[in-house]
Length: 299
Image 1 (cartoon, rainbow, N blue to C red):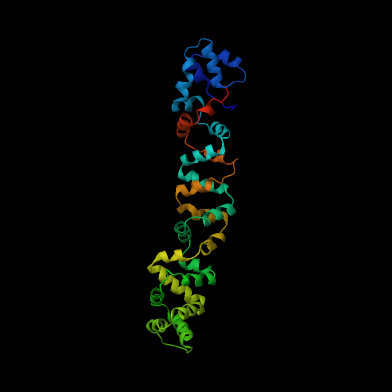
Image 2 (cartoon, rainbow, N blue to C red):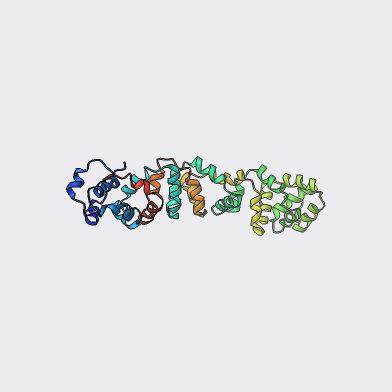
């Protein structure tokens, strides 16, 4: 039995119920009380269930669903799968705000399991490519260049526009000789002469500043190259954030992503979150999907 602060005046006004009989009813549900009323000759009460349970406005008024407390008490008596179903009817802002009830460890795990495109959206909406590369381990940068989708000619083209100091460093490694006035075309010519195996070894041998500059030039022309970084590499800057900052990075996700994450809410938190549902929407859902629980609400 679910005890709420219900609107008994609704029964008195609409079904001719006597206040004295209500006070003498003791512990019973509204549904049972109205059945008794009907048996005792109250013809209006006979249609109670059809009238009220099938009408969202009547449910809203009788069970005073504008009261967050009443909504919470009903929700607290629902099963987990029923609560998970109801979450889809919450507003996007409510869904996002409710992520704070999940631990950062759980959030981090779920974000790491997002499709790569969505993960990239989360990361690069909050971090510049340069900031991302600063915290990316060199082994991850080397793996980036090894991707079959990163074409040799695109890497060589990315040499264009590098500052003189980086060109000098590249030429010295390629030729073993210092170079004070070499330009990008000379470096590109040297790289073109390398077979694929030696080309990869040479890339790995460049210092991290040169490699990150090459990547920056490449992704500026084709941002999709960022998807060639591993999930672990993409997660690295996110794991360095505290929880409030981590949550801010998730504002770019869709409501369906929040819903998927919120399936992991602790069972005792779910009713609290769903209490924020629009009362009229809740009344409609009770009318269409949860009439049985209405029969459990006490007088």
